[in-house]
Amino acid sequence: MATRMQKLKVGAFLVMCTSLAVSAAMVVSGLYQRQGTPYSIEFNESVLGLYEGGIVQYLGVPVGKVASIYVTSNKRAHVEVFVNPEKVTLKEGVEGQLVLYSLATGTMCIQLSGGEQDAKTLPPGAMIPVKPSMITAVSSRVE
Image (cartoon, rainbow, N blue to C red):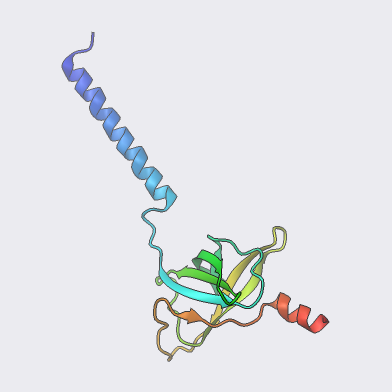
């Protein structure tokens, strides 16, 4: 028969194990990850292959994630992104472009480039201008 002290020790052990498991699950699920600085991008072309949680790159370096995608009232694909300010500081003059991330899966990502060193820092929530994707540029020339 277990004594009262043994039952307390087992109970304390179970509480510690449960709290450790919950903490580990929260860290793995990303609850403690910082979201980053929000920006918006609107495309005049199809964003087929771009998904929420997709990658945002600056000069090929992953710097953020796609937060949401929806169609605006003027029939444009509106993309909300979060950019990690510890990886890059976006300056005025930066442009976004939809690029093919994986040919095998057809996954697209957003490639950011440009922005002068001496320019002002792009404020949070700003609209990033876009340039046509390679796919759109090639298809318009073929037509």
